[in-house]
Image (cartoon, each protein chain N blue to C red):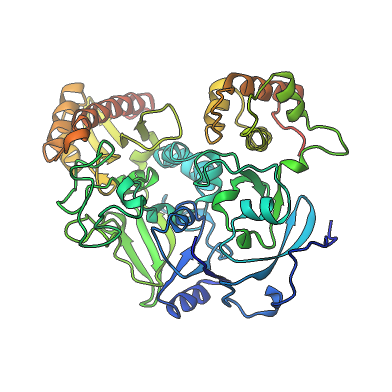
Amino acid sequence: MTKVKKHPVVATATASPAKRGAGAMRGPGAVNVSLSVNGEERLVSIEPRVSLLDLLREHLDLTGTKKGCDHGACGACTVWVDGRRVLACLTLAITSEGREVYTVESLATGGELHPMQRAFITRDAFQCGYCTPGQLMSAVALLNEGHASTDAEIAEWMSGNLCRCAAYPNIRAAIRDVRDAAGGDGHAAH
Amino acid sequence: MRPISYARATGVEDAIATALADRESAYLAGGTTEIDLLRLDVVRPTALIDINALPLGRIEDLPDGGLRIGALARMSDAAEAPGVVERFPMIAQALVLGASPQLRHMASMGGNLLQRVRCTYFRDGVSPCNKREPGTGCSALEGINRGHAVLGTSEHCIATHPSDVSVALVALDAIVQTDGPSGTRAIPIDEFFLLPGETPHYEHPIEHGELIVAIDVPAAPVARTSLYLKVRDRGSYEFALVSAAVALRVERGVVIDVRLALGGVATKPWRARRVESALMGARADTASFARAAHEELAAARPRGLNAFKVELAQRTIVRALETAAGLAIAGGGA
């Protein structure tokens, strides 16, 4: 979990944050930032203005997380930071330093799809698929949050994930399937 | 987004000192409004001071029955805190109806009070807008103003205040606790939100470097049977056309205590004092509610596309009060 992946964008120009005084200003040029993504420590050189979404997609080649609106409205960029689903487009990557970031790439383990991913396929819960990574990250988090007891509740607590193909009934069906397979307590893996 | 510097503050004093060292800096909490507006080039701080590591996230029940909500408690934390759900349901309901789950996990309670208006002309970065560029005029007066305010407006700005939870907090006479260059202050929340008047760019009576540290909600037994009713274009995840935070106590069919505030219709979270004074001692029935609602909206100044809000606000007030009256009776208050 602590291995540092070598990556072309890693720079060596600035000192690590631990060596600076409290409240020290960094940037606006590129600074070294270390953060945990899908259980791996990553060290990158980025400007403080870089969003977590752009860091994932443009610097770490984790393109599963999608850029829909880039305004915090559509939910396509939903990831988990410290165990909570949040919007990567409205998060500056540098604020995630020292936090645990998980993306849709973490759902499948050892080539085995997550139960929610399987349910999305079984239930045909997508058409174009662009919103699907965000839907999946929200859906798994939703079951852990315990707000999936009824269809109305699922709809309300999935309201931050828009699907322009309107696959909503099938998305709800997929979530129901995983909820019920998990034994009624609504808690899935992760 | 323009280039920006970044510092992570480790304590309140450190945060304030860092802010005072740079007039062009701004605090960063959840960032759900701020990052968006930075990207739109509507706000232009050159440095962000990340306050998320500050120990201001607790939600405490106060011994007198009140509540202290740390400024960095997230909307989702506050919405689920037992003291909020049981004793101030209007706060919990306003929070859950206020944003998507992802945004609620991010947005801080202090930041919620400071969120900027959703007026298209403010957000587009180019239209004349007295709030964004003082003195340039208000494009909404004769523009697309369906979502704009009918109460508390001026010739200089008619932007609606977008917060839901602030409506509940205004109804409950919350106190905004701040720390800053001039020491600590306790600001009554109704005074924390300024009417636009001739200075719509001046939204809160706080100075550069002043930091919200907590929101105190005084004890209010009447709030146990309170509710937040939100009327909007979609079933979910949308700003209010009209909303009402209501707490009501009825004895022998007569109103003996009432709190009511409106969202979606005013330039600040709007305490409906005319409704409250009209209802105290009045019969708790639909006719009284309608009369009180009519009095409140008598001051409304609709503009073109938002005229429907005058009637919609009255109906929302009546329905919220009727529902609250039912709750009050069910709760043993009759």
